[in-house]
Image (cartoon, one colour):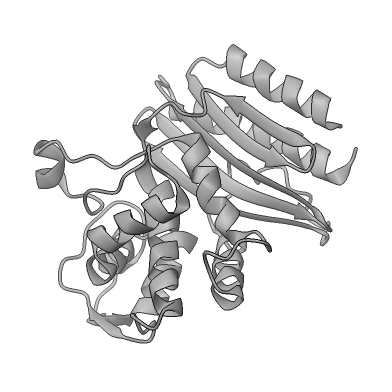
Amino acid sequence: MNYIQLKEELNTIASGAAGDVSIYATTPDGEIAVRENEVKRSASILKVPAAMACLAAADRGEIDLDTLLNIEEPVGGSGVLAYMCGNEQITLRNALTLSIIVSDNTAANLVIEHVGIERIQSFFKRVGATNSQLTRKFMDYDALARGLENEATAKDMVRFLACLDPTSEILSLTSKQQLKTIMRDQQLIDKLPAFQPIFDETLIIGNKTGTLPGVEHDIAYFENGEKRVNIAVLTTNWEHNHDGQQTIAQIGKAVIQYVQGD
């Protein structure tokens, strides 16, 4: 599949979907944009820029990733920490990893608390993600009742993914490699990476999903040799979340065919 075919396929999928679909992708041949600046509830995809803000602070020597954090306010939803007994502390590095690899809400909140929302929002501005915001911790219903909502756009999420590109100077090489590895080892792979060939070791996909009732998101980088695609797919207004998952999986399938040159 070539670039023109990919662009047509993604537009066709988006226009035919039962939900509202926003897409932004950067490829070696050009950009693909569908409602890319539409602001949506972010769900868990903002755990990636929160992790990036943490790593950027560590690069500057402001934060030690081996700092032990006390697990004092576990929250439910996705993840494992809230459901395990006898765990009183975790390193910041491991909290960051769990916040991405299993979308652990308790771990993500530990990262947010240690890094600080102001420093995270400052990172958003540095990257140029002006239409997205992280204003509260995850599963914080009191803050939500006060009108504080985490929001994102597809274009902003690709701005964050671009921080992992070889030419970006936002993060150190070590931090880039660390976060790319964590995203590559992601456990939630039923959306953009759903059609990744099992035995193709040349194709690398790293992703982070987000899910709420009626909301399905995924952001990912696709690499095949020197060919790289960064893509964010944010979708809302689904009657059945499964339909959103399947729609994003079809978008991922098309991207895989493009990066493989089929």
